[in-house]
Image (cartoon, rainbow, N blue to C red; front, top):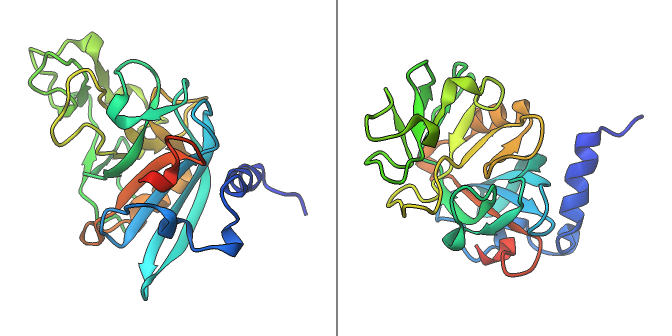
Amino acid sequence: MAVVPAVVALSAVLLSLPPLGSGPPLPDRLAETGGGSQLIIAVAPRTDATTGALTWWDRQGGRWVMVGGAPARFGAKGLVEGSKRVQGTDTTPTGLYDLPYGFGIKAAPSGTSVSYRRVNRNSWWCQDEHSRDYNRWAEPLPADCRAAEAEHLADYGTQYAHALVIGFNYEKPVRGRGAGIFLHVNGRAATAGCVSAPADAVRRILAWIEPRQRPHIAIGTASGPTAITRY
């Protein structure tokens, strides 16, 4: 029976971590998991990598159980510590973040309970650091947010078919650190700083997460200063 390439990619990255079979589940190795009972973990083998693994976990009966996994893609310039990230560098910020809401051009997958916004022709994500709406969804585009410094969400029919907002630089935005970091469907190659995964994986995650379980996403590398175990 042929091995599915996606499974090979996922297994290769997981094997770059400390042996999974001889230690605690991956979430138990993290310094912090956000205090909830649902966790998404995105791991790259090193900071210059553009591919890695995405797994998602439930806490059941006092232990973490992996619910699913898929290959992941990261920024075209790799990953960088979230607190040191600079906007426009095509890097994915490492760290532990909440997941404010989902959105998409397509309807929410069946079973979705997280807040979900439908994209329309007036939907923008403002990335203009001089705007009052910096790092926010905006409808229509605000007068103080330049179109050249914003994403017209409807233009990304593949990537934003389904997505989740990652709470990087979101609650209290630091201007110039970065805006519009999402977990979204794969495009043709690496991202501009988001985490992406196959369409089916993103749909499954949207149907799985429950706001009352306080889901978070941890992004990091297998080792080094941005090791996933730091978060």
